Amino acid sequence: MSDPIALSFAGKTASADGVGVLFAEEGHKLTPAAQDLDKKTKGLLSRAAEIAGFKGRKDQTVDILAPQGLKFARLLLVGLEQPSTYGAEDWLNLGGTVRGLLSGREAPSAHIFLETAGGDVAPADIASFALGVLLRGYKFQKYKTKSRKKQDTGAEENDRTLKKIVIHCADPKAAAQAFAPVRGMAEGVALARDLVNEPANVLGPTEFAARAKALTKLGVQVELLGPKVLQKLGMGALLAVGQGSDRPSHVVVMQWKGAGVKGGDPIAIVGKGVTFDTGGISLKPAAGMEDMKGDMAGAACVVGLMHELAARKATVNVVGIIGLVENMPSGSAQRPGDVVTSMSGQTIEVLNTDAEGRMVLADCLWYAQKRFKPKAIVNLATLTGAVMVALGKEHAGLFSNNDELSERLTAAGRATGEKLWRLPLGAKYDKMIDSKVADMKNTGGKWGGSISAAQFLQRFIKDNTPWAHLDIAGTAMSSVDSEINRSWGSGFGVRLLDRLIADHYERH
Ligand code: BES
Ligand code: MN
Ligand code: ZN
Image (cartoon, helix red, strand yellow):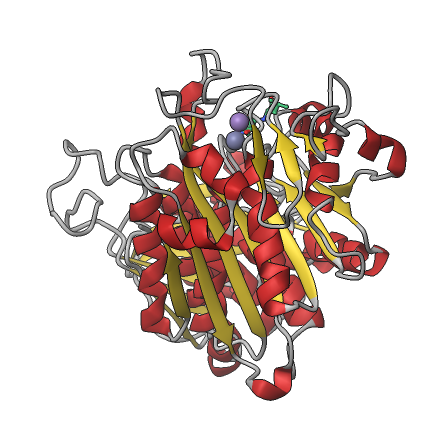
């Protein structure tokens, strides 16, 4: 749902108009392009910088309107502080910052002269910057009818609406090459955000499944498993969660075979897709319940990731599996005390119908292993409120039976800014979910709620399968404003898992 924006690359001296974006380092050292303009305008930039107290620090900007003798309507001078210390995430965030600065200062085109005082920016960093530009451009406003003049764009359209961004750099060809996979990434993240932002009246299990089915266009093989098939498979835990809803439960299996037969067994990515979580008979309080439209963020990430992998034709075999259910209270809803049999054959005593995500995942995880024998399995779920008590909204919780996978994920988190923090698993925690009447119960008592939830999932993982569970309740929805996102859904996990796959599972 991002505004359609034409983003391209051009040489440093290519013609430019509209909004010109220039940079300076700490101590207001202008970049060469900024120095050029300064000369052409007899010191306009440096004078304006001085008057504004601009020192080239991050978050400092100078905004100059109608600069005399130039084609630009406006010049924006942006502080880089110390770009020599930048990593990929800094370039990404800078792109987001610049896109944010452009909004409200719009002309049909913006020209960004991306360089440092000391020299050129590497193509990979330019690509990160460009991704930041695209991600920050995302808006979810399909239900804002008042500000919509044109039906199809979602944005208020006028002759000053930004339509084109050109990034000027030393080697536009190399930049364009590095940028090639970025468009698909931006689409994948936007797709995940769209799914999370969409209200639950519009997006139930069936509608969500239809959105996943659309990946077929990109060459992903998509199978929809409806309630009858799930019944036959014996997915009693997943079906129990959905049985109170009028909307039928679904599982969607998405296969991307980018590495072919030689690529061997796939990586499996499994997502919790509770399209709305009322808590069921163990009903949640009214305050904040509306947030539970985002309880499918794990599944949204899986769909966004599959889109992104297919769009950039990743050389890897990945299977995405999502469990789509709606957790409602009704005459047909499951009750506290019910005992259900999961696909694995293990029985579950349902002590709290609000601990539903683990039941959905239990059957999806089992199915993933049984059918695909994956090399590794990663699941994502808005699983527990407790993970926010532990980690806030800065890190997602990471649980794993495998140190190598855990370290790979943590490193991917650091590289992308989608950060993870590992929490423990162990036999004593596992005991917390032993049940008197069944093989296990679906809640583990008062303390360590995120851990007992993870222990529950682990009971559905075969011993030798490397597995990681990401509890994204704090990071995927109700998002804190950032340089690259101002929407409620963040799309958390798409960039993280792309990085994990690119670094460790792709055949290069
Ligand atoms: N979907 C919720 C977890 C959640 C809470 C996600 C807040 C995002 C924001 C999950 O299904 C749930 O209700 N978990 C319970 C578990 C409890 C009943 C053992 C929780 O966290 O309170
Ligand atoms: Mn719940
Ligand atoms: Zn839930």
